[in-house]
Image 1 (cartoon, rainbow, N blue to C red):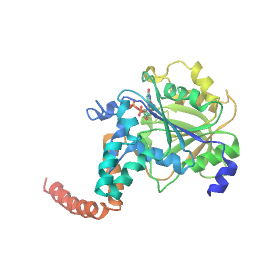
Image 2: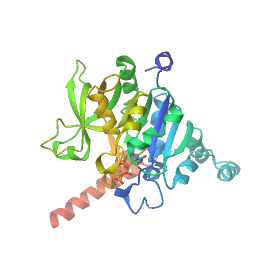
Image 3: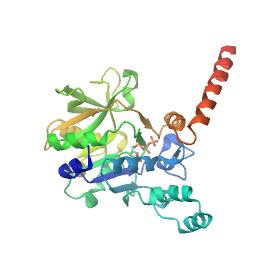
Image 4: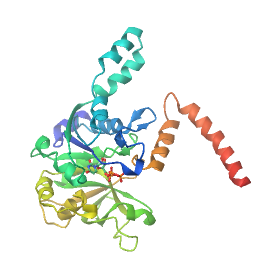
Length: 309
Ligand code: UTP
């Protein structure tokens, strides 16, 4: 989408990034640091997510923080002493990297207080978002910049006056790890009508293998639904429960899902985090060649070691 088309059609201007989870899957690394600050190659995961929001035209970004929020907010602030030193040394390259995060977007912060669930975190955004549709990008869910998704979701939201969620086909044996959509085909192979959502179903109970992933374009009515919601699975206020309410036709407007077929990494999961580092590392401008050569050599040694076992 061109910038002109975007400004003509733009109904969504704000992004909300919940980053207040406890990150227990990544302990002890996340004991004193939010998982969203874990680096992928040379940038913290949250910077990729803010960059994604900005490239979809959303430069007003609200990050919902929890404990250890200092690390997160510092990252988007300027650092005068560091900048001064780099300026004195004339190190333009590194200076650019420092400015990269502080000049990226208009970044706001809001505390969740207690981690009462993703739905609760999103509900906290009401005072900032007001009566507008908005995008939610989970701070630990990384969509590869080469496979843009959010622009498409916003376009579907605008065209269908709908809540739009992102879905991804996953192996049936993994569906119990995700929210799962009850989906009907539309005339577009990349878009489904969502008529229900089931949180982490067993393989036998799963209505599809379409998993909900961490991108949403929500209408402001979601706030009233979240306010009324009782704690669900795990005693948490679940965003999936509020979306299910809408999908079942109990709110205003339908729910559609955009089926994402690109590269995505759950950086809150240790194995996925390592894979993200490898996959983005081999394509990195400065490091790619060295990392790629090392991986090829290492793969040979690993194969030899395993065949000798
Ligand atoms: P997760 O369920 O992946 O986060 O939430 P978690 O609870 O930190 O995960 P564990 O402990 O490793 O299993 C998805 C997203 O919602 C945010 C998280 O920061 C993550 O980006 N979240 C979750 C909140 O902001 N607040 C919450 O209360 C819960």
